[in-house]
Picture (cartoon, rainbow, N blue to C red):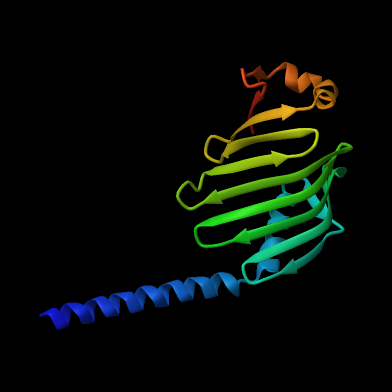
Amino acid sequence: MEILNSKILQNIAKYIALGVIFILSFVAFLPKENIYFYFLEKLKTQNIQIQNEKTTSGFFDFSLSDGDLFYHDIKALHIEKLNINSLIIKTNLNFENILFDGNLIDNLDISYNIFTPNIFDIKINGAMLKGYGTYNKVDKKLILFLKPSKNIIDRYLMIFSQSEILKSGEYKIEYNL
């Protein structure tokens, strides 16, 4: 009986290992550039376009460099580098050196995982603006906690005057998209 249980456990372990290898191989050999172009087509329906970009694809990641994002044919921002890293459990989008309205954002991270697939976590880091937040796909609600510099507050006074100031000095901004 003990030998039978040991054989069953070995078979289960073998099938789990094969399953993991299959999933990793599937992710590694996905045509990532085709998926990227599919998402570009979806963005066009929202009047968003990315142009002038260079793309590269690796086993578990996809990178875009020197892209310009246009909204309604108006250049909204320049992305120096975007790296998309997707593993089985978690996907990260890491933007580096985004130039938005003359302001440089050093790093913007957006991530989600399979345990909370409707929630996207956001982290912003720059000399003029730092913050974090979440986007809920179901409620279409964006909540940001920002710590802007005085120059940013003065420049975007309309936005910050309508937001809640917390005891920590952060501004809580909520948008329904």
